[in-house]
Image (cartoon, rainbow, N blue to C red; front, side):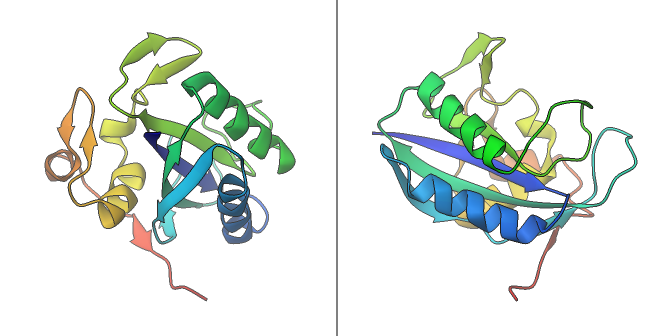
Length: 161
């Protein structure tokens, strides 16, 4: 089993419900064992396209799936929530990104690992640090140290309704 870190985000429709549903779908997938899930965080969008704020979370899973199989699972879960990829960094019903897959480092354009912008995204690092204070981003080091370099203003834990 390999530990993988999955980033979840949504900003259209019932974003909180979508994130919870995606977490449940991950937990119900053969070959995936859900180990930890962060709280939900509200974050401002990145990329300049005007859109609603995001709801983000991090899930840590153990998986028997290889990286490409896990990517396929993530994409199929996105499709259940009608994810489309029309506007880069645009609004979305659901976005699932594989942040890490063990210590694997890959520059494959189909699946770059670790996620190429994870080190600069507080909406990934803040919830990850919540559930794993000793988290390490391969090639970058301790997530806690990366957070020292980032502003995490605008990343707010949402109340649990």
